[in-house]
Image (cartoon, rainbow over all chains, first blue to last red; front, side, top):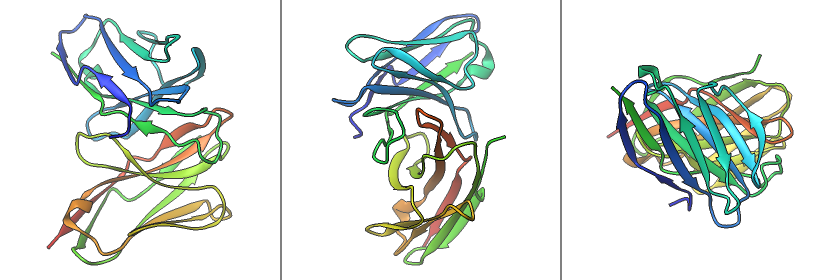
Length: 116
Length: 110
């Protein structure tokens, strides 16, 4: 157990819909990252937040958005869903997210999104 | 561009030693991470290297050569539970964005 929690574990929805994925970082971690992992694909970095502020963006679609709240939990919003958005979505957290030698990212259990 | 290469699949025998290689080409380098991922589960941190050399953690070791832009993960005394994907990732940029390789699927057989 990494200490990172994600809800829900599974989500099944239809094309065109909007969903929200939630992540709570490990106690003491200020930085949250979101990744997408499609079937047989590597982990794709989406976005990073640090202490409520967006820090880095990866290959995140305009239909997707995220935020980090004052209590440091984060939400990833996916809208106008398409079949190709079906994937595992992982959240990770680290202490600072500034690249220090011990700034390892710890991953939550993921949310499996299925778009029908 | 940014690229991380690792073999797609490997097989090995229980009790043996296996080496999983990773070469990288990234803009910036904050360190190289190895993660283990069982199917459908979260990646689990295995090791971190930022300087050339060896890091050992029990049955797992990782080696980095920055001059050769190369790392490998060594798994000793293989067990069936080591069957998983092994992900090589490089931290880049001022905020340690991780670039992941596609992963190496390791199958351990009796």
